[in-house]
Image (cartoon, rainbow over the protein chains, first blue to last red):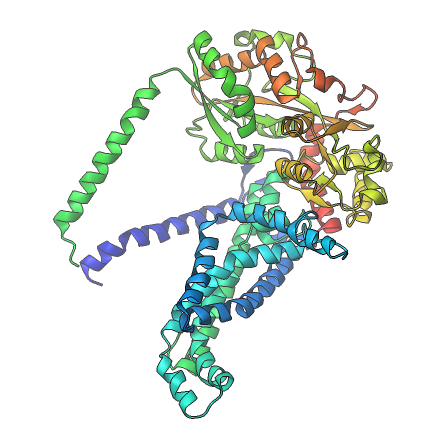
Length: 284
Length: 343
């Protein structure tokens, strides 16, 4: 690395170091303990918080719910996001591309809280969907304060990130390869399955990892739209501080969460390399 | 593009100069008499902000608000910056205040000689480190236009089939543990045995619209008609009525009373903090608070607002819990509650 390159990357390196310091202080606090009813935590350092968490059915339930919802959201992201990214990358209609881009950027620009309130209005007992059902004489549905509301709202949040990331990857696939396939007699579906999809898998792996990681850390939407019934890891950490002010245990849970995310990212990174080698010849 | 060392130095010098310019006003204001108050947004807007100009005239102190979303968040911030908390007075509920009082370095005992208005405070609303600004019942706030018969009179009304998916109950972290405690008392339990309450909530979990983690979110749901009733305070009734939405409140047996108030932070400005707390306990501030906020005054000389009198519980319906016990057990209760109602 040249001196200039080092100087240019210094701010980013300092930022990464700062994250490291934060995680270290989390780990340090997580070894302390707190007397019930007090506000001061103290030593000696021990692994008691970790032992308690690993034996807690509530913590494991939060892990299971987080993983399950993140998986569902990621699958839905692929199903809904891939066609959108493809439209953005390949549609011959400029107005359609602009429309999709406008919708995605519009979603980007509206903040999380705004979107959460919007979903409260849409999914509520008196929301647009239930009023529509009532207008047709159909029974209303309980769409709010449950996992459904959380999945829909988090999906709405992560979908633009997924689509924009995948769009970049799809854009790099030469259209001439698809044209060649079509000229050699392959149907559009066969061209997609045998040319476009394999070449897009490295990009798909990156956008899927991003989508999964973002879903894992979701807090606002489960908190606002889960109705107190959807306990994910982020809300479980928050609750430990709000209910018992047990910052050492919350720090331990946050640190375990961090390790879980690292493990998932390492595994997905390895998978990405494998599919990259298999389908694109290069690591993704 | 090459970035020469000279250009980097220039950029650094410019940044330092800009930072110095920005620092000038804050250095100048440090010389002024200021009392910094960590409080809730609605308390600042509705109660303190309108009274601040007169307070400055009378005492010379300018009130600078620092907004917190919850008491626990406020305490975490104060502890994280304990060497220089930057706040002189902290607003919190009684339960967290009792917890915070164990932090002997961060919170100061109230200097009673500098707060003469403490003499007018009702018994039970003040201790060595905490004084309540107000108290309120956590009863049933409802929309008369949306509930069957237009009226709710008992806790059991909330669990009738006609109210299915129309009721919001606070999660254990809101109004610390009150949902669990009320249902425990209704089902033969007590502060020492909340199991009957949690079992009751588990049985009715699908009848409840939401276990809300924010009072204002539940109030918005009530305003929109998403729900018809919630456990809440008289200030919620006032806020809804001020917006032209029909609202009423009832305080059946058992209705818990909650005290919320202030603690003095060890921030090097005990005189400013004492001046603020003394003003808060004055007849004038207490009268203003009860009229605009619809919460009960702790000053014995001040009568509760007219709108409030009708919803305050009778002495036999009111119940006061042991906050120290709640502090000690709330974490475990929350775990049990989540196991019963959450997925």
